[in-house]
Length: 145
Image (cartoon, rainbow, N blue to C red):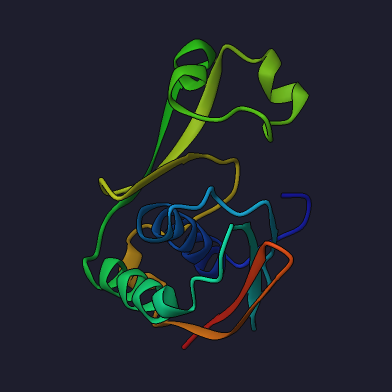
């Protein structure tokens, strides 16, 4: 992340991605634009998941209310390669012996170098403000209340 990103929105992005993987069966977003007022994430999907959008929002809020701890863990690059997709990891990070994992309780874990809240309840309420599905791409726009 090259610019300063709102830590609540960024942590919410982790929860949205984890929920999309679990409830919709997608990969994590391939593109994200994270801002303080509203953010967006784009996902490749075979079909429009319109009947699951409200479920995604509800699940993210359920996880937020659980007050899960957000922690970091450093693991070897070899172990990271077994557990995570390293395609989007910058080349410079692949030169390191260890890589940083951000864990949200037992709900989500991902390679990340950004800043995050300490517990999920700091995020506030997650609201999907709109979404659209076109040509195999789902775009979700969200804000925090």
